[in-house]
Image 1: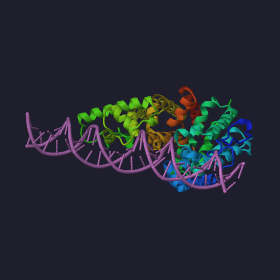
Image 2: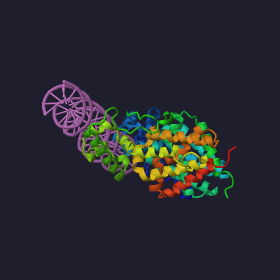
Image 3: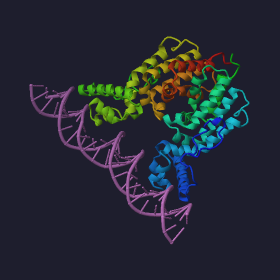
Image 4: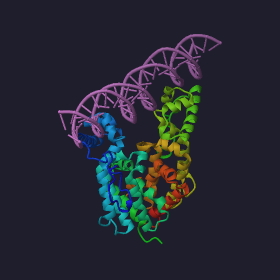
Length: 211
Length: 211
DNA sequence: ATTCAAGCGGACACGGTGTCCACATATTCC
DNA sequence: GGAATATGTGGACACCGTGTCCGCTTGAAT
C-alpha cells in the first residue's frame, strides 16, 4: 500500500499509486512488466473508447499474460487510476498550498472559478483516462473525489452558503467526465467556453457578500 | 417506431413508447407478454441494483423466453425507458402548458427552481428506473434529455445569461441519476435538502436583474 | 552454486449477450 | 368455419469478457 508519509491533516490526498508493491523493492522483471502495462494501457485508453478497453486488451498489448495483469490491477479502472495518479496529486498540491486564486488567499468565488478552470484543463488533457477511471458509480469512491468534496465544502462555508453539505454535489456534478465528454465531443463546445460558463456560475453562486 | 402524431412544434417529447409495435394492433398474446415483461421488469429494477438486472432475469421473471424479450427491447435500458415513458411525458406536459411556476408565466429563476423540485421528485420516486435507463452515456441520448436541454436553454435566454448553450449542461448535471443516488443513498441527504440546495442555486444563478 | 520465494501465464469454469431457426398460434381471407 | 399467412415464441448456439487456479520460470539472497 505504499503509504505516502506526511499528508497534512492526515487527509488522504489520493489512492496511493495503485498496483505498486508495498514492502521490498520489486523484482526487476516485475517493474518492467508494470511499466509495459502502464504504457500499453495509456495507449489503449487514448485510441479507443476507454470504457471498452478490456483486461485482455491491456495484457496482450503489454505483452504479458492476463493473470500477470490481474496480479496488480483488479480491473481496468484501477489501471486508469494509476495513470492518473500523478496528475491529480499535482493539482491537489496546487489547491492546498499553491498561489491564489487556486490556492488559499483569494475569495471563495474566485477560488471556485480557478478550481473549475483547473479541472476543465485536467479533463481536456486526460479525458480518456478519466473516462476509464471514473465511469459511473466509481467516481464517488475514488480518493480524488473525496478531496474535491472537502475543498468545495471549505469554499462554500467561507462564502456563507446555506447547507454546504448539500451544495457540494451540484457544484461537482458538471465535472463528471461523461458530462465533459458530452459537451466537448458530442456538442462540440471548446473547453474555453465550458470553463467560462463554469466561471460565470462560480461567481454568481459564491460572489457578492451573502448576508 | 410508432411515430406519434401531432407533437407541438414537431419537438420530440420523448422516445415514443419503446417496444410497442407500429402499424397494426398487436396480437393478443404479444400484448399480454409485453405487459408481463413490463410488470416483471418494474419489480426487478426495484428490488435489486438496476444496473445488475440482465435480460435473462427479466425474461424468466416475466415467464417468457429470452428471444421474445429481445424481439421488443434491445437491452435492459430500453425496458426501463418504456416504464419511465408516461411519468416523463406527464412532467413534460406540466412544464410546457401547466400552471406556474413550473409552467410558463413565472420568472426564470422560479421556473428553474420548480423544475429542479419536479425532477428531484421524479428521481426520488423512480430512481431505480432512472438508474436502469440512463446509466452513463445513454443519459445524453434519450429523448427526455433533449427536452430538458431545450427547456433550460429557454430559461437561460430569458434570464439574460451569457452563453446559454454552455450553461445548460452544468445546470442539468446535478440531476444525473447517479449523482442523486449518491447524495440520497450514500450520503444520506433527504430529497428535501437536495431540492432546497438546488432551489438556492437556481435563484442565485438566474435571479436578480442581469444587465 | 544453490535455494526459495516471487513472478508469470496458459487453461479453465462461469455468466451474460445477441442471433438463428424450427415450431406454435393469432388473425385474415375465402 | 377452415385453410393460408404473417407474426410471435423459446430453446439452442457461438462468442466474449471475467476472475481464478496451478504448475512452471526466474530473479535475488545466501
